[in-house]
Image 1 (cartoon, rainbow, N blue to C red):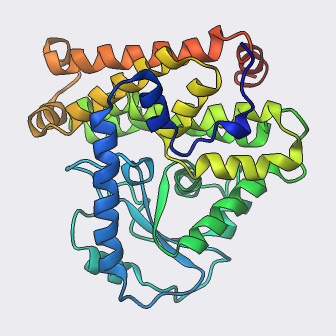
Image 2 (image 1 turned 30 degrees about the vertical axis):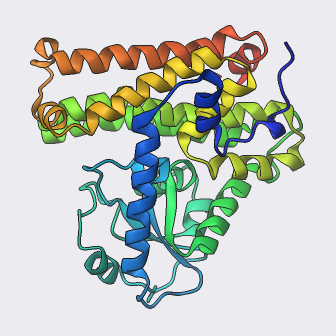
Length: 338
């Protein structure tokens, strides 16, 4: 069977289309999308009265950008300026924090501050590309949503994508500059997992491990697959195609890839496993258990064993898509490793 043109298999809405094609439900994933929309509306209302520069957006990342908010999701926000560094950006971080007045940002120093488009776009690699700058750039592209300032957010994301593509893209070849940075991000996540383990000790190991095996791995695949699909495109088509892909949540991008290759059953197995993962992580008792779970105790935990089983199912399905399909496998071998 010939592969459909990717332009007629858009990422937007692909998760629901895949579920409908298979005649299955994904209650946790679709429920999380509804909860994300509901809580985004509340945050937009809370921030509506703040003084706001025209080139500025308040951005939420992580589960918010993936459409996977659960009852325990953090408000991982930062202020994005679609321009060069300057003082006096509005809204002030303190004003945003006071208006939200809910879950504080995470503890790694990425959130609750201001970032500038020019730094994210121009400082790629070398010493100027700090871990924070690099992480914000990847979060912006892969898993972010604008709470306010949608035009500024959209323009900054497009500018970052253009920075990867201009003068480096070739017809019918995945853009290596962008591809290498996405691969670097996945490797950074895995290294940072060990770094957090060293700095924090056993605290939170079970929860971090479960996320690394599932949501973080799917996030990487959701960046890798659209870039590899550029082997179908002329260089001048890549910016619009990638901007459309990355405007959709990560699970839509994954579902779209399975739809393009008519791997419906395989895609459902992957996303049904992740649906179960999301349901487990939204269970307060399971989440508390994982947060207290140490690596040494993990082999005796039924909950962790179930999450490992689901993670193995997710990985097996992704590997099958990437390496077993005769149309995609040559592209993966040529571009994804070296």
